[in-house]
Length: 81
Image (cartoon, rainbow, N blue to C red):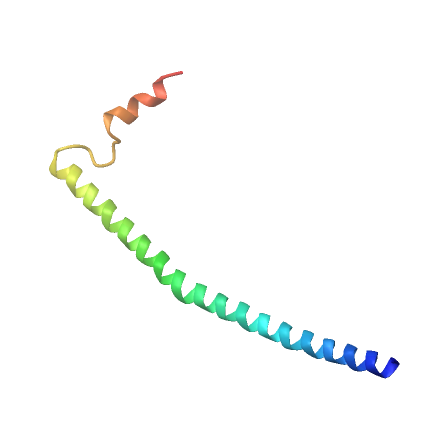
């Protein structure tokens, strides 16, 4: 009986090592995917927002508004208590 329990314990330890290695591999792959996918997405989003800000700036200049000054409806918001 003791021998069977010792073999079972050794098999459980072996299975634990295998599962731990597999979980580490999956975690590493997920981390690598996150870095390789989300990094460019964040950069592309920043680029698009920059282009949008530039377009808004030139639209305001073309319409004769001060590009730095916010629209009139936003200026009055701070005056209300």
